[in-house]
Length: 150
Image (cartoon, rainbow, N blue to C red; front, side):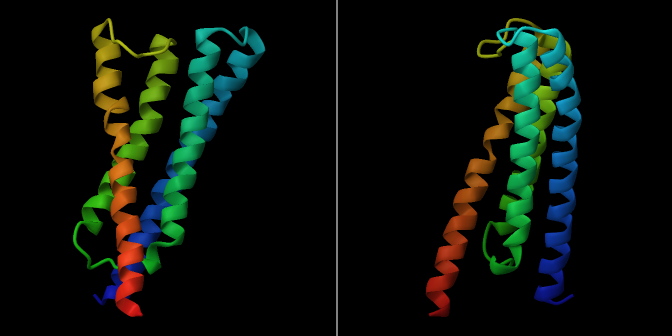
């Protein structure tokens, strides 16, 4: 396979993951609308469902945005494949963790007190920060690639 066909294949997979994450965010919007109709705005359940909904929408759009510029990224560059995987896994963690929180815990999780809370915090919320590193790699690649072309 040529570099162009590999990049197009990776772009399609990124777009697929972005759509799936966006869909999960839209599904969590159902829980948010139920909580909005039945709970007070200061309720932890309302806040948990709102957080899950917004995380899904934001992370899905982020993956779709990266897929949109993927053909501009040098796919043969160092760390790009790892950055792509970290982005997708981190964005899935960013939607799955809040959904689990909204379904079973429904409170802010700064300090976990139960095993389920610890699972959500350490299993999803902390890995959800990994896309920050992938963005650093993508930005470095984009600007470094531009310097090499000129």
